[in-house]
Length: 118
Image 1 (spheres, helix red, strand yellow):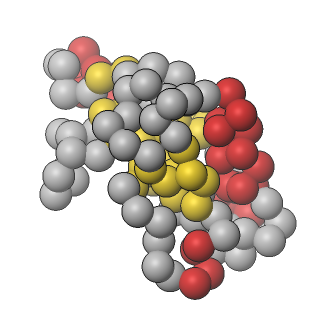
Image 2 (spheres, helix red, strand yellow):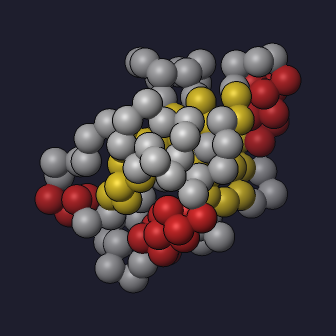
């Protein structure tokens, strides 16, 4: 779980690292509310503050959207203090995020994108 407030986002966001390859990290964003897009609704994992103490309120991990960021850029953000590690996502929540992300019924993500969910 990371704070991505300085990653060219319009406002502070939290993200979950879901996987990586040789050059890129793959992240899913955490949102205050579930998506209203019908195709995405079933791929929103609700995460509770009682299990994830770094949250300010119950939230949703959007497993239908995957963001890639170059590893050297992420490492630079971390070294410069623009990226903070907030803590691990509750084990059961992380398992659900990974399952939803690579699900065969997740038609929003491509097969290549699903490989990031490791």
